[in-house]
Figure 1 (cartoon, one colour):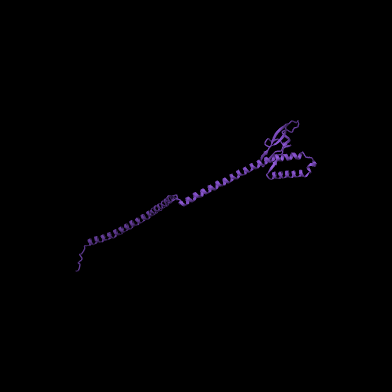
Figure 2: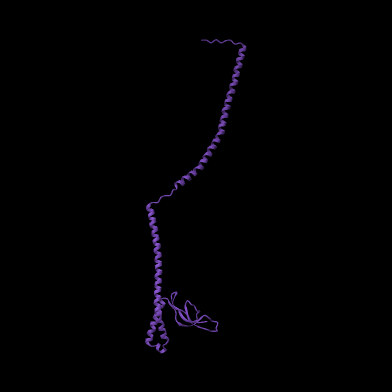
Length: 229
């Protein structure tokens, strides 16, 4: 079919042209507004993005800070006392008992040695004390002999026995106590006589009546002496 165009009056043609021009001017404004709106939204999204990233970072840091605390708590929970095996406990008990027994045995041995030494010293001291009167008699006998009698074989034999006893005393650490000329010591000397003198020397031993002896550090017999007052 052939379309038949209606003839327009000049007024209608002007009006239609102006309408098209208006439509053409309006559409670009709408498109511009829409583009501007989209641009604004994109800017807003870009501005909001860093905040979200910051929030994400801060949340991450908070989580990182909280993580070690949680790990510490978990570590504390994990550090529970480990129960020892019964065999290990038995071994420790036996080891402790063994060490105690060894210490007690060592103390017993030391105490026994001290007691044994003390008993030996007591016995030796008692024997020396019984021999001393024999030594005293020998010394008195030698003092009463003349020079000629001392040269006889019999006296020479007795003198050899006396020297043997003195050697035995030295081996046993038996020593005579020094008295004459020494200051009086009541721990070593037994004063049976006193002598008065005008000299400045006082409290001195002037004469010895019986020789005293010591066994090691203990006195077997005190010296009987005369003391100057």
